[in-house]
Length: 107
Image (cartoon, rainbow, N blue to C red; front, side):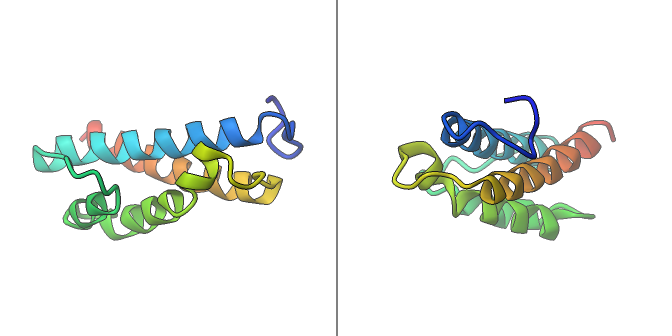
């Protein structure tokens, strides 16, 4: 994919799907380290409540996760083409969660 500012439309949905999964994995890692558990629910939104328990930064991380999950079905199942602006937003949310998890993991 190379340049994030001009994603190849043929791969935008795949990139979006992987971006969502990266954010979910980062949230799980942060919860495991900080709380000793992660959400086992089929509903990814349940992980938001766990993230909010982590201080500092858990509320912001939960918000980023919520935004990612809201796009999960479109990204994974290709109901709609993922626009460059949507992909950029997803990348920003995933980066926020990854940075949050890195901070938690290195404490």
